Image 1: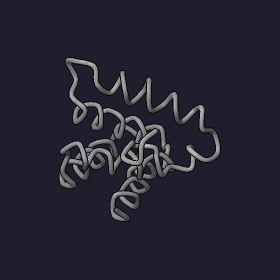
Image 2: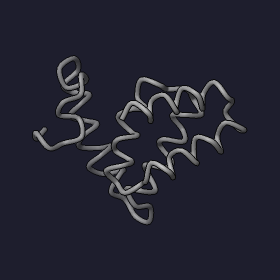
Image 3: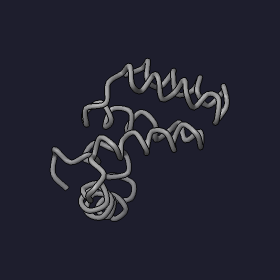
Amino acid sequence: MTASSPLAQHPMSRVAPKLAALSEAVLFGDIWQRQPLSPRDRSLITVAALVALVRSEQLPFHLQRALDNGVTREELAELITHLAFYAGWPAAASACTALDAL
């Protein structure tokens, strides 16, 4: 895992280095690079899933990754607003808090 990898500073790297290595090689090295979806598309999908499933702990990492992949803050805010009607207000409110903290 290199210093520029997505998980280099993540606690997973210290706690479960093999899980981090597999995430880096398989998830980010293969799945996130597959066509026809772009990393930007995958970020939108991932953030939507995390918001809908109320996975607040993973959300800041993937919100930042989405920004790094070209998704705008306005698009993320609209995604959260849209999901409020499908995933619930508490899930959307938690996601707003996470986005605001970036």
